[in-house]
Image 1 (tube, protein in one colour):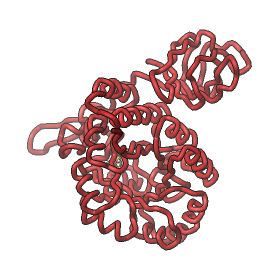
Image 2 (cartoon, rainbow, N blue to C red):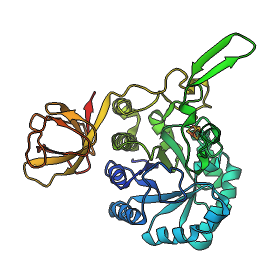
Image 3 (cartoon, rainbow, N blue to C red):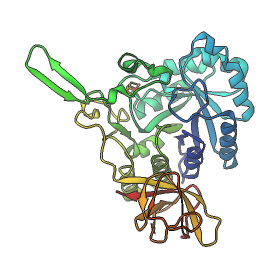
Image 4 (cartoon, rainbow, N blue to C red):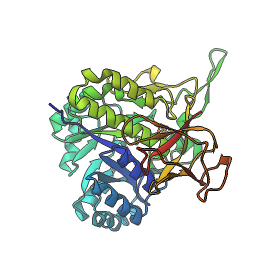
Length: 397
Ligand code: SF4
């Protein structure tokens, strides 16, 4: 019998990535509008783009959540009702808030469903009940919670729980980090995080003659694929992929992998161990730091920090996105990363194995001969079965 699966929730840094996440199998996406979100560097959505995103998602019964997780001051709260009414009229499915003032304003002015952001660091059932009483329908738990704790909170507070399953981690409790405020003059909790924890720092001891350079504040990335069975068994409501600022290659690969992992476990995890192992290998092909399983099973310790190096080597690069397949003989790619005519490319279909495509016959959009293709250019390649619009194209480096 098929088990009930958690929602797979993916980041959408722009409209194209929203479409990519949904096409590769996300059940829902989260995005930021022009105000009130936490990623000032992301290409945040205009109202028009939110509307286009909602239309695209709802066409296949997927959901769109808007983040309002910045900590606001009074003058900003005054602008909030108008923003809320606009996104409610567009038809977004929920908002993600961290500030009680924002939660109260959403309740007062709209009927929008409210999810509590991880920024609020909700890590226990009392806290979850408190937020539920204020009108919150789902808590995105602090990344400090294990799967078992999340299940207990769900049961005791009778509220939906969401946990992070993949992506970058903070060294601090979310919503409480001010390293960037002091080292870069940028407020982490108002969209300005400068990733100060990823820098190399020097540790000096005054008592001993000791000095060492290290990335000792840089957390490894979260990899939750090994715990999918437990996540399903413990009836976690939603699993979230981090990364509104990550590339389309990263997003497509990670969403596709977790979609396949969840679906294969819906029937029988035991019988699909080999497949899960293959899927896990895909997650090593995208840019990432060293992986760890965070707090999903036990409390993260010293081995969850990448003290010696900042990131793993990248073994695949982004080539582009398929933007048109309507021609009888060719398909069109918009190039995002340099490649040369003759390179072997891999198109990642929405389901199934990558499709190898030689680029010996690659030409420009009007059939012009080009040897080296640069970002933003268009490339025509001979048609291959199974390739669809919005497929990601990558190259082995
Ligand atoms: S500086 Fe690091 S720990 Fe602090 S908010 Fe940014 S990513 Fe998280």
